[in-house]
Amino acid sequence: MEFIQRFRAFAGEKQIPLQSAPILLAVSGGVDSMVMLHVFKSLGLDFGIAHCNFKLRGDASDGDEALVKQTAVDMDVPCFVKHFDTKDFAGENGISTQMAARDLRYAWFTALAAEHGYRGVATAHNLNDSVETFLLNFVRGTGLSGLIGIHANQGLWYRPLLFATRDEILDYAHEHNVLWREDSSNTSDVYARNFLRHQILPKMEALNPNFLRTAERNLTKLGETNDNLLFLYRHFLQGKNADPADEHGSFSFDKALISQLPAPRRVLREMLKHYGFTEDQSRQVAENIDKIGFQLSSNTGWELLCERTAIVVRSPAAWSFSGSDGHPNIQIQRDDLLVRLSDGTALFLVATDPASPYPDGTEAILVDAAVLQFPLTVRHWQEGDVFQPFGMAGKRQKLQDFYTNQKMLRGEKDRMWLLVNGDGAIIWVMGMRLDDRFKVVGTTLSALKIMWQ
Image 1 (tube, rainbow, N blue to C red):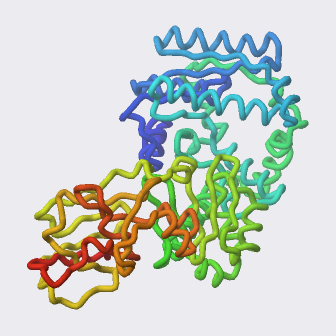
Image 2: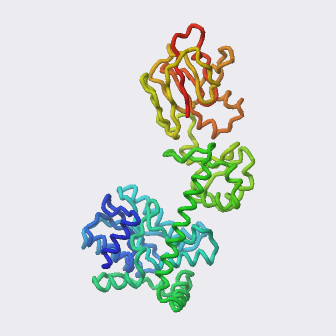
Image 3: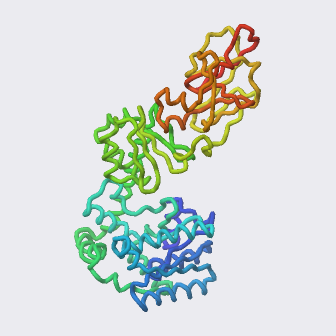
């Protein structure tokens, strides 16, 4: 199959959105990125170019920049160029020059995509790169997720050339007269990746001339296994006490189910690393899983809290709210029979006989319909909320104090739903207590049963 046809087929298989929105191409001037650029142009796709000059190779770095700029002019596409003091950044942060270059370019690409409306960023990693990544991770030590090579579609990042070997990309470049520049550092074995490339891979291919394609199939199988395990982890761990992840960036795992697993620490590591938690933090969570109130923060701002029955994980935005939490208020109209909440639960409203058996307030309440003012609202608690708990002879109590008396932790409080009357009075602390003002009394003529499932 022709190279461009394989390119399109691979992009379709990996759900890389070539047509739906402009994509920012990371172009270094090397053969891989210049071929990617040529293919995007040949297909008439909407894209821009981003080039980093790391000032590491003197005139050679400036030559790379000049080639990319001129190509952008010839193709009449937007081109963004940024110079970095890479060595200074590496020294200031105590990291290698390679790692500094990686951090700098990925941060800049992310900012560019957001500023100029690009759907994602495409890098020109190829199959050789993916196999080398697998080998490097294996040598240095890794879990299953580190043995699947490079992802073709990972959030903002697309790698549409992962189907092609380095030799196939070179063949395309020669066939289509693509101009590129060689990076002299690629010939040195000082870097671990180059050592693998020049010393190890040729020996692998001596054992199996089709080694790269065999490795590709193996990486695919390992990736599918990893995806299946993560899927099963999530569904297994989201027991009756755990909420599914929602659009507000919060989810929780059932502690009892985690404790039943043969290797809880490994599962926690796989589930938490995507939110910036380190392997050592996963170990700490496994060791302190029974400590109510144990809390950690990841380096990306996510928060983890061990509650009585669940481990709750929240994004910075979801964790910091105190009532005005970004969750949309849910309106209930007079004729509504069923209202779905954002956590997957639902309220059922049924007119009933005032003499019906009185629920205990955990899963249902019975209220005097005449006292209700529609629309009702379902929301989370806010600072200053006050209600009159059923059974306390009309005494008022701050909701914050009520939660504290129930020995609830912060994460539990923030997830509690309130059913609120049209005049602002709290009708029901859902799952816990009816407000005394809405109870059915001897003079009640019509009642409404509200069930939460």
